[in-house]
Image 1: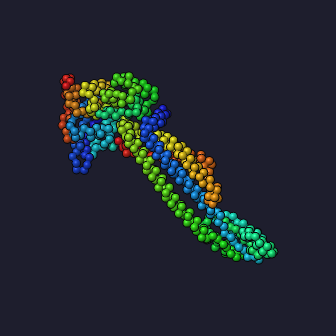
Image 2: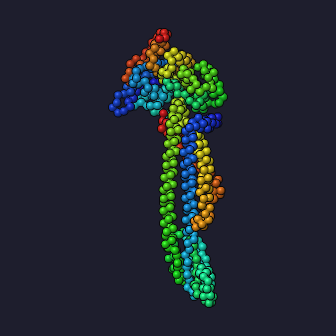
Image 3: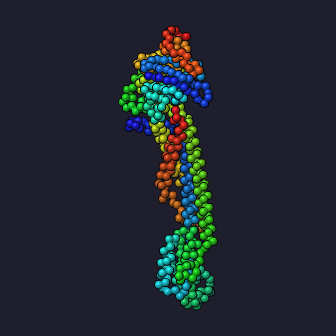
Length: 302
Length: 229
């Protein structure tokens, strides 16, 4: 293809956006709404994942060690715990620290005297272990119990299994809904593109009769689809930003929800705004261009 | 040159043949009228000549291409060697007259300089220089068909196939259209024109091929009477 032809076809692609403005607008709207729905769904799905992750992070296994355990053995236990791949952090709690924590947790008037009379702490050495994967909680607890010197292991098994089932359900349902949404959007976009191409089937037929190659015919349609896709990408980015920030702002007003759900860690749109813009434009351009070109297939067989 | 050898075309297994063992030869530079009633096989013949269809059996040669076994990727190149004129003009509605004619040259990868020289020349031939910037919807039927003729002739093809080019225009203008085609023929271009209008055929005369139920039942030269009906 000559350079002059390339610029001609490029121009034709952009000009035909205006010439077929009704269908272009329909395609733009469908693509924009589809990208908006998928974009917002993905963002909120990621946020829910982060919230569940935050709740999971608050779960810890407490490993109690026999009172008579020596310093060197304590160090050994700490090393063994740290060596497990699913262990995130290990914090040593001395008997005195444990007593302080216990004292603090009661906080009742009059009872301090009781703690003061105790003298040396009767509580055992312990380790607070947090896991990087809550699904390993049973495996971890069993493994920790087998370590020499470990007296007892306490883990929130019920809460962990509840979180695991929530995460599994969310992953399955969320993925299915997202997949269905993407499929529905693609079908609608494809049909819009087909309608647009069908309206210009005579034009394609003329091009075929005068000896235009398929790529020569497809190129302006490709450019047209890509242009509409990019514009729809920019528009959907703007609407995604508005929708996401409005919903987040709504939750942020309630400080209790903020603390309970750990919303402080959710995605800040300002940090990902360029990625969302790039992803929307790329997806829009790709779907617009490929959808339009694919829907031409039947009309090219002249 | 156009040549059909023992060509059979049938659309469905066991159906009546659209073309039945047709043998035909049209030499370079000829002007041929193809006539016949509906269902005689005229459309099928044109589809064979433009490689929209391949024969069930037999061979079709056009401009040195064997269309019976022409590969799909060679079809565009073949079609650039012919010019097509349709009853419904088939101009691209959102392109101007100039752009419609230039389009066929862009398809054949001609330089912008060549296009700038050639398009005004062919528009002048069909006496539409003053309509170069108009869109097809702003032209009369006769003018649109003249644009279609200019488009077909723009790439200087060896063969022009006109499928009932006078079917959608005033009878008076039909003679003008055929005269334009005759002028193009005088430049050495082979012209095959399918028509229902017997008056036109009688007026201009020349080689007439008549199809009937998929067979050629008349192929001979007649003298034109030059009397308009």
